[in-house]
Image 1 (tube, helix red, strand yellow):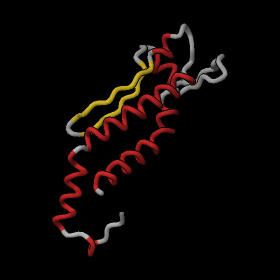
Image 2 (cartoon, helix red, strand yellow; image 1 turned 180 degrees about the vertical axis):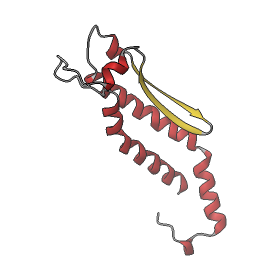
Image 3 (tube, helix red, strand yellow; image 1 turned 60 degrees about the vertical axis):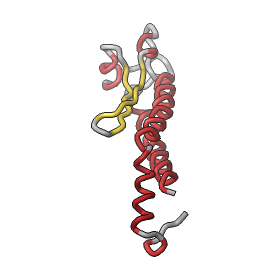
Image 4 (cartoon, one colour; image 1 turned 90 degrees about the vertical axis):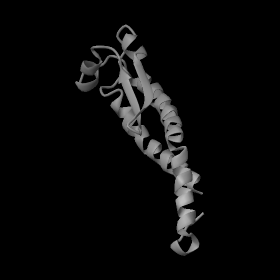
Length: 124
């Protein structure tokens, strides 16, 4: 549906925006949970394996803070930051430094697109 100024009254526009705002947090958190799972799965493949604890320690969570939905992807091992942020010569062929940042960055455009699409669908 294409909206033009002459097609919509102020009242109709306010109603559409109200519908969009109504379930936005729930819609956004659902999208973030779906993409968080994708990021976690992609991160597991490229996380270096020592004893296996580092790979199994990748996790994501979705929450709300002051009305904003937040996706956190992290590794709960103490030494994860050293493995993540500094270059290493990994023995596993798929292991990478920045094993969380890489899949997160790759998934970000899809997250933004899904949130915009969900908002636009709610307006209609």
